Length: 435
Length: 139
Ligand SMILES: Nc1ncnc2c1ncn2[C@@H]1O[C@H](COP(=O)(O)OP(=O)(O)OP(=O)(O)O)[C@@H](O)[C@H]1O
Ligand code: SF4
Ligand code: SF4
Ligand SMILES: [Mg+2]
Image (cartoon, rainbow over all chains, first blue to last red):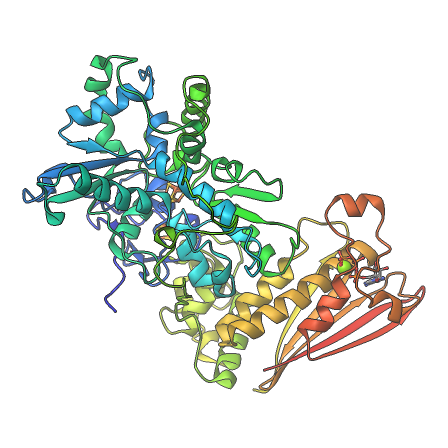
């Protein structure tokens, strides 16, 4: 299997090692070494938290640019994320946005919100199956899925084994284009997703567990914002109609996906800290009656994505305001004579979602791991326990681990060093040399 | 080294922090290289025990010992004690108040879950004195 491709990276020239990002990383993937941040690839889930907090713009999301699209693609289908609908103050109706997308050079659009409505219907059906593991956890946010596969391996079976809306949108868009334009070949059609976050780029590159993605390009919402703005101002309201209902567009913010399930036994949480707390609780068996759990890495849901332009709550309010101009739902499976729990094969993930636990073991020998753990405890007790970050680790605890793993020296803690010097100005004894 | 120990004080007044010890235990066991299935069993047992101490006994202590072949969790409190252990072990039996029910606890599933999750469960309890629960999960 090829290496996992990340979509959050560091521009070393811009990084000044200020430690702002250190403690914002939910997986403790960041260390400051030699005055620069370093991301441990095996731990990073591409959530984008570090991008949001870096004032020096050293943490960057990797996106495709429109200019990068291969000219061999004669038919370019744009997939606007529901969160895009909330970005523009000037937007009179969704149709104006759709017109603007075509003016930007796309040949066709396929609203991800349409696919979201189908995925909601499929999820409702899936949840009627007798033999599934509850609570079902949404598969829509790739950062959350990655987090579960890494840190909550026992919850992989809870993840909804249905394609995320953007994937279903891409597959449907291509299939429809082939049908409507018989002159086109498969390899002449591409899909371009306008994404609120780097996590979706990682999804498009790596797929979901063993399921490959059909999305060809992922462009940043903030880049597209400026391209779209002039056309949106010129677009004519009332001319083009959205093919999605409010149910699909609601997926833009936290709780929108859950609402589409018509169940009151759901939980929707947003932001990594909340999501991790909820997952820990589920793993402990805390919510026996819960049916569905929607988790979004970003504050407020996808409207809070690191590449979104507008404040998430303003974007959410705008989408709320569309309630009156959109029907509630416009996309249905139209299944006839099927059981209520039937879910079509083509919306299911290609293979089960399996865990992918990074190596956090201290040693493959339990006795040795226990010895190291003991040592970590001892060192931790010698540290100031203020989590100041000056040593380059997010917490004193993480620093103690790094010391025992041999990645740094206890003297790298300035508070410790100063205390040692004060207490014992000429002494040579270094407690990490062992008793 | 043949044992690694963790100690926690469980705060009786705090529903919010209940579960913290369980999270900490999970993290430690993962670093020790314990299998996912065993980690899950320990975390469920630990969580239920923690919550019981918060709800029924105004807090207590939790001690976790990792041995090369087993994990031992000891939860001890100075709460009211359990008058009828056999009854308390029954699925669905609970003395939780209406208020506790409204917070989503009190289904009477905690002790049965602890039994299911561990290879060995021992309850020592005396009314008016306290309760000590020892659970063993074999590696
Ligand atoms: N540490 C304890 N001290 C005193 N009584 C306890 C303790 N732990 C359990 N009990 C008693 O045993 C009963 C059953 O416990 P159990 O954990 O199975 O259910 P519960 O805590 O009432 O509900 P649930 O665990 O499903 O939220 C409790 O209602 C309580 O009366
Ligand atoms: S993207 Fe998220 S997980 Fe990755 S380094 Fe940044 S904060 Fe950590
Ligand atoms: S919540 Fe939405 S925007 Fe944020 S990482 Fe997940 S999918 Fe991307
Ligand atoms: Mg209980």
